[in-house]
Image (cartoon, rainbow, N blue to C red; front, side, top):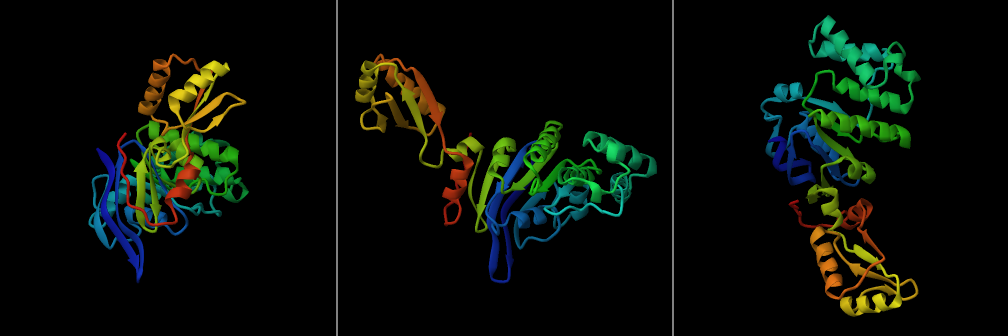
Length: 313
């Protein structure tokens, strides 16, 4: 069952089309990443799904509710951590969380209990009485995320959650996100860090000029980009020459006894290559699969009009 569904989602500002009929399906308990260059429509998508702005067209369901017709029901089911921190620097970390609990009408005792639990969960208990102005960037971001979880949401929107963090703080945030998903929370993530999407997301959508140009797993998206190959290194010239005859005109390094056979990196192509080697009784000293990374995918798919491509695992 999907936590988020959008069909034909559209949004314009005057003559500028920001979202041009996009479709999204995000299963419950999954991590879904939306990638795209600046101005592609990522933040607008999050704002529509989280009831902050209205769409111009399309059908949307978030946690089973229509954000336009049932905004209160959607807000009760979601948490949002935006690009910019919502932390109040005049309140302590604990007071920030209690304020959120009051906004959720949790009651004094329950609010304090939930605040204490989140401070412990996000490794902020020792700083509960400190002002966020004294926090590092990673601590502020953890507090910001904790504030979005006070209402115990089933769906969490994270709009570029690790922007500006150092590598260690970024990886700490990644683990918190993984833990949330493992506990059954649906994560909708927008990011410009391609490694982040590669590390976290079950599925990735690439948005460009308001259109989805590809949707799939990280591995599926990488196979859309040419340049993948299987590198075969042979132990002796006889095996190498036999393989050359078997594979024909493919890139080769005669000195290193290496062939680079073009491949999409999939199981079927690898199985076919191994069968060909077996048919010719060729032993391979070393086999390595090389596929493009998400940087290659991003550069190849964005910046020019392309039809949407939906991939099936």
